[in-house]
Length: 68
Image (cartoon, rainbow, N blue to C red; front, side, top):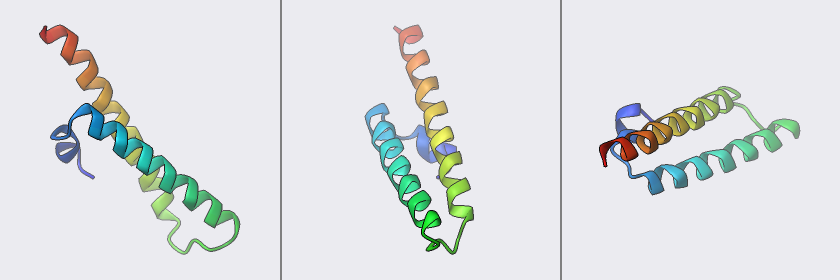
């Protein structure tokens, strides 16, 4: 997910995407422990997606009070 796509989402949608991405990351970790993950790079990209989502969510929350 690109930062531009994330910025177009509302804060509630971003929160939902964070939850979904963390759940998929948890599933990847479990599958890695059982030896079922073939694409290990997906874990790294999921972690980066979570960081991207949280960063933009924080930007939106700090910008909202300043605008009012």
